[in-house]
Amino acid sequence: MEYARLTRRCDVAYLGRLFFLGLVARRTVPLLLLACISSPVDRPGDRWQPTEPPAAVAPGDLALAASDGVLGGTLELSVTGAQAYEEVLLVRSSRGAGEGTCFGVLGGACLGLLDPVRLLPSVWTALDGTAALSVPLPADAGLEGATPCFQAIVIRGLGGEHAELAAPACATLGRDSDGDGVIDLTDPCPDDPIDACDVPACEHLGWKEGDADWTCPDGMRMPTIDEWDAVEPCIADEDWATFGYYSDVAISVGGCDCKWNPSWCSQPSIETIREGRMCGDYAQLHICLSD
Ligand SMILES: [Ca+2]
Image (cartoon, rainbow, N blue to C red; front, side, top):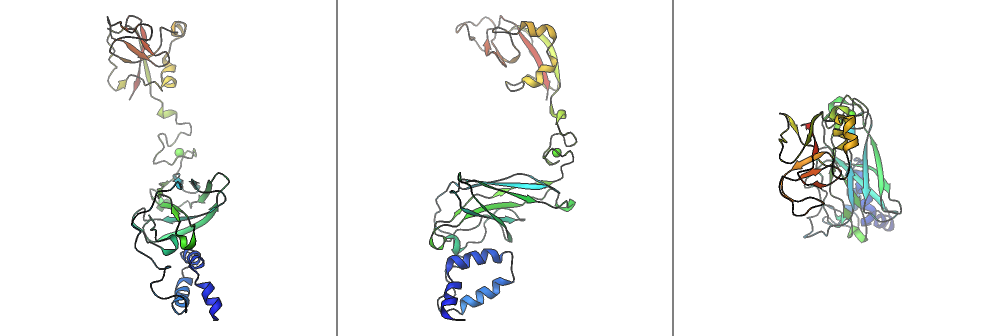
């Protein structure tokens, strides 16, 4: 092989790309290594070999997010924080995150994935520096509960000296019995696509002033400020006419003052879902929710 051709084949950036491709086409790796070791411009220990990690790597903006993966469906990878129209390499490890191999082509940076790693199809960012990849998954029950991890890489600069690696993102694989896109392992209602089973039951305990007994029955609790939808099924028709600036559904009881009187303290004050803090001599609706 003539000198010029060997020189081109052993160019660091070019070799780096081939090396990554070699993670897929493994048979080509030994041939590449032999060609370069015999080259007049490369010697054992040159930059394309694995290196020690650099002393410090400045954190960048590149980030990767991975959805849980639906067996027989897909797993979604989302890249953010790259530059416009950049190629982003995506690698996967079935063994998970950890101290991985360091590469000269990455400026000496190390993967955050345990070997062995596999190269996924690379993606190109849009103008806003984002990109996405939908990874098809087999309907293999043996993968239930598997937790592969992924990493996004952008190679920049001569010899990858400005390469940027996102923090690894891991996913859990599983079946999605009700087809709502949430795997059974994390679906609060794995057999209910609208997750109605996750709405807490409610109980109407009447209108009460601050001194009253605000204890909820066993296994129930006061609602939070975000649970109007959960208390609404227990609101009686006559309650709706009472609601207003001085009357709402209580979320907690205690302390002094209220939104119209900063010094009133004859009864514990009552916080409500929609109307803020009430003085305790104005009755509020007590609805409890199941835990
Ligand atoms: Ca589901």
